[in-house]
Image (cartoon, rainbow, N blue to C red):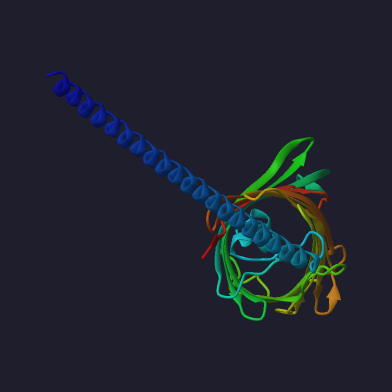
Length: 355
């Protein structure tokens, strides 16, 4: 009986030791597999980090190449100049330069410019008033209010050129009064509504802006006598120069105009000039400050000049432009007369629409 119990105990001990050994071997195998898994994960992480570093280095190298190319391109241009592309052309400053005739439309581009302008002209001159028996010194005052609406058309042509066409409509209110001791003794008021003269023009970029030279735009224009019987045919030639120092642009122009004689009457030729600057306040807004002056020679009839028929006028103009939407801009300008022959003031509003 004791031998049988010993045999049973021995068998149980053998089975227990065998189970313990198998369990230890399984634990060792599991530990080894976990170590292999951890090593594989570490290797994968190291590979991912290496790839990320390579991609980042490639991006930095590409960005450096782009920056170098841009610097080389910029170094080939004068300070303050920009490359004209579709995005740049939408800036308010560039649109304002096109409005002033210092920058032309790209080939194929179309711009319609509806606008309205109100001006006030005042003039007074000494006169004499007669009552039939006595003559008194008096003063004649003239007040002219003019409302002009217009539609201008511009078309960009190849070879840096541009075609322009315009047609205005005038509504004029004229008040004339003769005053004696500050009291009006005679007065009259008339109103004139009429179409203006159809005008055609061709502009061409003569030279692009360089390190020292400005951008030059030349233009020749013809103003017909289609508006009314008292109008004349006029031909003009002008040159507009502009030089950029972002955000400022200096601009100046000179114009010469001659009039074709009609019914033995020939208005004097006109020489005018303007200069000033435009400044970009933001990509969507800009302002301009300009001084404009002109001199008109004596009017002649039958080749005889009328005395005191020449005119000298000058005005100061301040304006602003605002981009409302792609292709649409609002422009407002206020003119203040500086001489007696000038308009006392004017207010000009336009809405250039580019296609």
